[in-house]
Length: 211
Ligand code: ZN
Image (cartoon, rainbow, N blue to C red; front, side, top):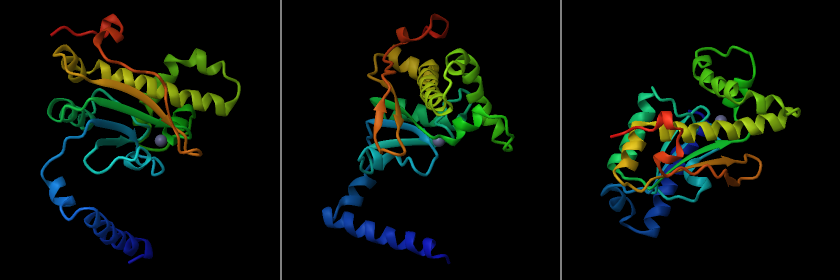
């Protein structure tokens, strides 16, 4: 067994002991059920750990992560997580959190084939095409990359709002805010990008569903 592998098992024991010192019922209470107010949709990148960067305890955040924090409307995994979070857990907030330096977004700006992941990355390329005028006008490569990371978050916030899951919750009067954040790998800080959607009225008419 590698040292790392041994270490993570040891870490788990220490973590349990620490939590039990806070309260002997810590895990018994968690086992009763969950009532998180937040669904987090983030990147799989190992440097963007959802709970840690927002100081959330177990039980406080329902998490979905994939490459480049995407909301792809035919992704049954994402739809299942979203449906459960909105309709069963009744979360009040969904945050899409992108991050500067995202490898998925970077790959979408290039032309190299990486393998099967090309098909996932193509969703991000489609966004580049939608915003190419703005992006191509940015001469500095890094600035353009950063802006595309933000645009990708923007598109995923709207992709969430376009789902029947979110729209029917809004239609039923459920309190549900969708937010877009970006995380700075080199600072640790998140920035709220100000893409906050709260109702069908925030969508283009063609996407507004009637129930
Ligand atoms: Zn990423």
